[in-house]
Each structure stands twice: as C-alpha cells, then as structure tokens.
Amino acid sequence: MARTLQTHPEPATTPRANEALAENGLMQRRILIVEDKEAERQLLKGQLEGPALVVDTVGEGVEALDRLDSRSYSIVITDLKMPRLSGMQLIEEVQKRRLPVTVIVTTGFGGVDEAVQAMRLGAYEFLTKPIDVERLRLVVQRALRERGLQDEVAALREQMRDKYSFHNILSKNPRMHQVFDLINHVASTTTTVLIEGETGTGKEQVARAIHIASAPVRNGPIIAINCAALPENLLESELFGHEKGAFTSAVTQRRGRFELADGGTLFLDEVGDIPAAMQAKLLRVLQDRRFERVGGTESLEVDVRVIGATNRSLLKLVKDGTFREDLYYRLNVVKIDLPPLRDRPEDVPLLATHFTQKFVRPGEPPKLIAPETMEVLLSYRWPGNIRELENAIERASVTCRGDCIRPTDLPPDVLTPNAPKQPFVIDLETPLPQLLRDVSADIEQQYIRKALKKSHGNIGRCATICGLSRRSISAKIAEYQINKTMFKEV
Image (cartoon, rainbow, N blue to C red; front, side, top):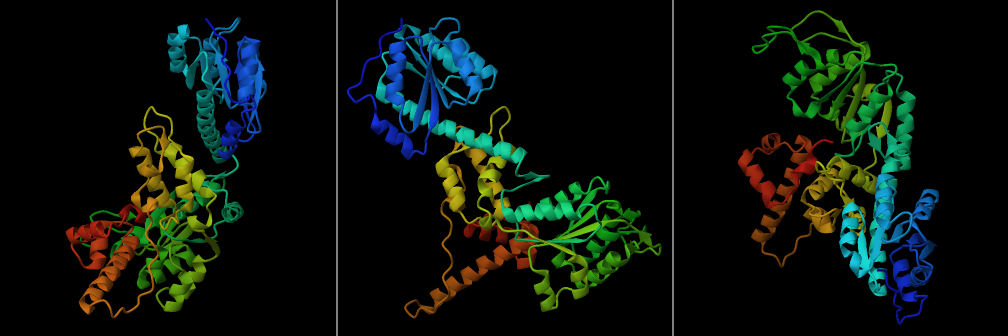
C-alpha cells in the first residue's frame, strides 16, 4: 500500500541540493517522475527541481513511455503500483528499447520484494515510502554523476564511429586531421611517403591508413619490416630475397619483402637505422623499381609504394653523415610529421575510451573511466605516447575490480610521474665517490632507456647494445623501475 510522502523540515525549493548538483556540473539535467498520486508527484518535484534539474511528472507508465520516446531524460523515478502499465513493466520496456536512462524505484514497505526484482531487471536503486528526502537527493546526485559518465562514454563512442575515425586512426586534433587530408590526397598515387614522429605515436597505423585509403587503386598487401631489428646481411635477404645456395643456410629460393609487396605497400620502419651499404641498394630500387635477389642475376621489377618511418630526424642524420642525402630526398617526397600525444590532449579521452573497448573482459561491458581518473590521464605528459596510454588502460582494465576505472588502477608511473631531471652541478658538499656513483647511475639509466628505445623493448637486443647479459639488463631495468612495455611498437 502506497503511503503519503512525508514533508521535510527544509523549504521545498531545496537550494542546498541544487547547489550541490551545480557544483558537480549537473546543469539542466532532466528527470521524469512517474507516480499516480498527484500530491506525491508535486512533493517530489518540489524537493528536486531547481537550476540544476528540470523535473517533469506523469501519472502512469504508458504516458511515461511516450515522454521517453519524445525527449531525453537522465533519470526516471517511478512507483511500482500504477494502473495500465506498472513500474515493473515500465522498467522492462526501458531495457527492451535500450533507452539511455537511469531508473529509480519507489515502493511501499509491502513491495520490497518487488523492488528487489525491479533491480534485477535493471533498476538503479529503490527507495521505500515514506521517502527520506535527503537520501533521495544523494541517490539522485550519484545517479546523475554516473549517468553523465555513461552519456559521455556513449558520445565518445559515437564520435569514434563517425566524426573522429579515419580508417584505423582516432583523433580530434586539427593537425591530425591535416594528416588525414594529406593521406586522402596521396592515396591513389605511388608516391613515396616519409613518416616522422616519436616512439609510440602510431607511425605504423598511419602507414596502414595510407594503404587502406589506396585500396580502390592498389589491391596488393601491406608488408612491414623493422629495419633496426635485423643485421645488415639478414636485412638484405629480407628485403630482396635470395636464391638457393646464395649462402650456407639458403637451402631454397626465398622471395623478399619487395616481391611480397608487389602491387601494394612496403612499410620500412626505423628506416634511419639502415646500414650505409644497404642505403645505396635501397636507393637504386626506389629509383628504378628493379632489383636482384641475393645470389641471383635476374633483374626483377616491382610496383610497390614505399613508406618509411623513423623516430629520429633523417635530415639531422644526413647532416651528421650517417644517412645518404640522395636517399633522404628519394624517401622524403611526401612528409608526414606526427605530433606527440602531449600536443593533442583532446585525443586522450577518445583513445582511452577506445582502449577500454579493446581490452574488455569476455561477457562484460567495457569499463567506465571515472572523472578523477580522466583528470590524471589528461595531466600526464605521456612520454611513451599512444603506446603508453594503451598499456595503462590495458593494465587498468585487467586490475579494476568494479565497473569504473579509478586512479589507483593506473600504473604507478602515471600516478606519480618522475620529476624532470635538474641540470648537473658539482656540489662540493657531497663526497666525490658518492657524486661519481650518482652520476654513473644516472648515465646508466639513460643509456638503458635509449637502448630499450632502439630495440623496441626487446631485452635480448637491448642487452647486446649495452654489452651486458640478459640477466644483468633485466636486473637493472627492475632496479631503475623502467617500464619496458612503453618502448614496444604500436
């Protein structure tokens, strides 16, 4: 049996509740009250309505569905016992129609079992009558915050599908949209493209976007090779292939990456690390589109678009004398400079939301990102760029114990980033042996980080560069608390 709603000693206008809502950024949200008793409808409306909230009321469930179909509401507060369409049936219809609204149930003491059943059907909370107005306000505030987060996530996913998605790349940044326009402009050509950007900015994703955009004209595959990961003798065989008997282990003929990419795209990652002798051979292929397999004499012709990528400035390498100037100009026909993530903060929410979908647990919805967590993500500098953000969200999605990612779910490096290094100064107050140990440790850590960057997080190659054993380099990575995953390729 429904009971009369008790009044509250505070005035019906409830300015304090409205101020609290306004402080949480909940301006002009809309609530629908579904209650068959006029007096209770008006009392609830008076307790909640104000600058932060617009409250509409209806007397039964059928009219409530009509309202929900005609306009958007953040919350529905409904009684269970109503004529024509009960509150339980209203909840079922909301779930069936997938309406983006949060349902709060009110019921008399005799209907507690039904209220529990309503929550199983998808209701957010239930309140027994007579209603405690202060609790009602708190529940509404909490529901509005969570609904706002869900609405924001839904809007971001809609943006990802439509406005801000370009093939396999997501961005709201104007500089990135200029990149998208350039990709569309060169897609139908065979022009060589050079992509420069910091590690983790998504250079391979841009290369794949160029390849996808050229699909109507070029229907071959995209073949990728990391030029920094192979020694010179293996790199030549990987690029151009080899004939049977060309060297000791060449027991059969093998086609190289140029042949495999015929009619499509060859992506040369870390092209700045190609050895000098190989640079001359690559230049010839780019000029003539012809080459011979290792150990062979037959000249092979290919139709391949070449895309080079590097995390260093090739022009600086040319000036340093470590990269051929003629090869640089042959590669640098169309130049794409990718901005680091710290220069495109508007993309952090978009990408973080995308990664929550990518790392969703089987049978569960994607995790939500709490507003305070998003503030942490936006304030961090992301030295590892998109790759580091992806790793952070993957970790948070795996370790999160609820539906919402909290700041404590993020990696420690993101929560407490290292302070920037101060310029080295000689402090005569510090004993010389201690000073030398500190400087040595700092240089060692920087060296290991550079080696990890060059080896893309591969412990074995990093150890080779440093002249240490795998066990030693692993121990030093642990000692300096270096997150090696941030150096892996996107």
